[in-house]
Length: 172
Image (cartoon, rainbow, N blue to C red; front, top):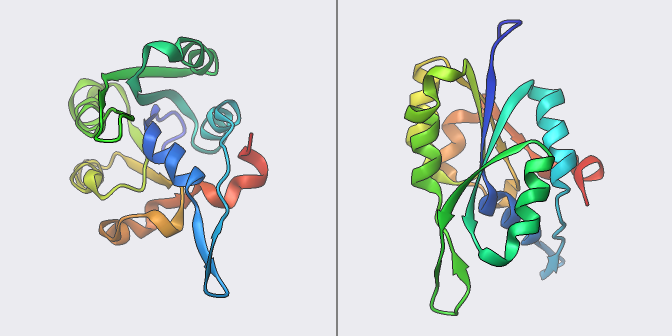
């Protein structure tokens, strides 16, 4: 990384949030819930300090009742990119942001940054990681949970870091 590289982060909010909250592990043959809640303010500072991120795009499904949350996230320094939500079969909101994240990282913002940090353990971003790597723009892949990452990410081992190992610094 050059001294003055412009670094952007592209964050899959659902993968980040659920990857930490649903941390379930086996211990003595039993499932043990070890989930935790991320402090998004601390996480934004972590991205700035560790990767020199100047813009952090948080891709999130839009729910009308979450307006205060969105204001808080913006006050922490995130630029929110919304996706309209639908309801799944259980009536829970669903807002799959994968296409928006790829579009912003590979096209909309591509000329504006030198290096990218992708925050997700989702294998759906495999093609994006490869594209950024081939253009010398992939700085890091920040994965919420090592137990819930896609096996497709094995190829990108040198770029991977895990949020779960920073729990003591990033927990709400």
